[in-house]
Length: 423
Image (cartoon, rainbow, N blue to C red; front, side):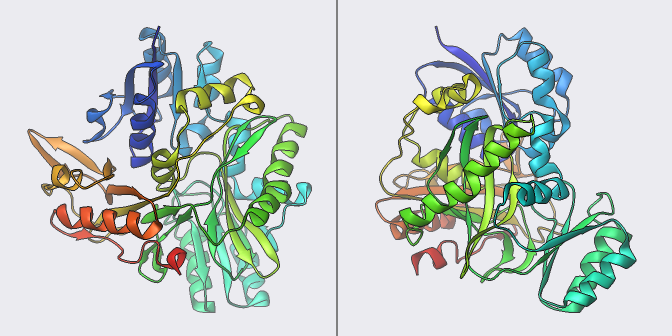
């Protein structure tokens, strides 16, 4: 008998996960809460917010949901997994204690220190004057990070002292990110950045192919941090030897340390790394799929995602053979003009059907909603335009061809997604 599933979230990450789960012959109905203007194409949208944990659990009980998958970080940090488990519900993702690896930068850095994980030299401050003095003592370039969850926007890569002072003032004095006045200050690491994903059952982990996110709003990696403007996978210049080193020096030690602490990580370990001249070094840990990385992974995953998530919950990953399609995937994010600062909403979107007529193109929705029969913009990041190809260039060419078909007022996107990977 087919199992009904629930995906929690609103982003293209959750749209992609629902899209992939829908393909499983073992899955019946797919629900997504709350979803967006496009998720209704693969699932039934449920008007319950991602932070309404008790309502979501009650819905899962009412509908006899056999598997719930959590996409975003905030409900994980808030303990949604603990609530579902207390009611005997099957749910994929780390519990509140394990999710601290993402929800607290200070926690994750101390864990790295205890587990011997290669990372940047750092210190933690909750006093503005002491943080300022530390920055002046170290000099620029330097990295300032807000301690709490800020959805990918809390890292300030400061190339000058003026930028570092501004970062500290915004986080600790002006509270522009609405987090506690606590920062992690790190040495600046030089080298290309990659995303690593390893799915975990608390004891065993399986590392995914490498991917590369494009975090800043501007081309050539300039401007403010965003939730992600595009991604490509796999990254050809990362060798099997390097991936093995990352697995042995980063992934496995973290899984072992979390288990040792009594907070085993069941779900996803997503380290962002810099590939420095001294080897891979961890920038941060996340405890869920990246977005837009999830979109390219769901396009390339050959195995049944329903079986994969259940193997995590059951602790049987050691027996799971995770398979991937040959070739490459790319996704390009379309954003509203002004993002990640102020932007306007409500503009009609056209051309998605034409875009999806291009070979291998699937458009995953982010900030969209239905306004009567019209689809309109409803967020900073609007659409994630994905494609696959035999080569990375083919995947990118198809994504950008599809991007040209889609129109809305103020459409903005980066034209250099995947450029460094191609080089």
